[in-house]
Length: 139
Image 1 (tube, rainbow, N blue to C red):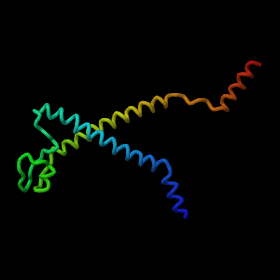
Image 2 (image 1 turned 90 degrees about the vertical axis):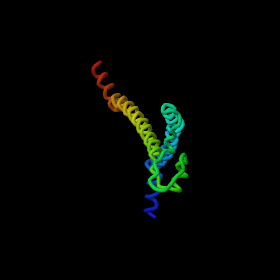
Image 3 (image 1 turned 135 degrees about the horizontal axis):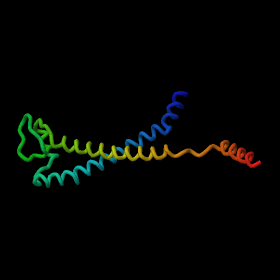
Image 4 (image 1 turned 180 degrees about the vertical axis):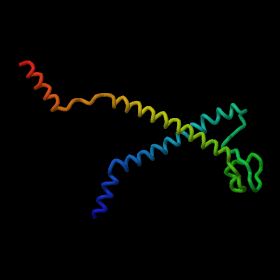
């Protein structure tokens, strides 16, 4: 019974709950970054490159045969392909995510630095001793 109690205490502690919340928020944030890359960055990049480039469906056939302009999902079922366009899209997702996390950590560190420079309020006993000292000086 003791081990069950220890596990319950561990699971209810803030660490496990914080981890679960972090995973859920991370998954949602990952979807936001995916949408940013697929819906905003890639269309702009495609327009700059002539408008006919869809990186997610760019691949090289290593073995087998695939008809031209076949979507990547279909090409993977009939041949061995190297999906370099999909890799570039995922790499862009990572770079954007890393950049955003870098700025978030930088902001948190800036706030922590400001909080660390403020002097903590004096303890109650110190305030009482100061009052006694000031009263003794007045006498």
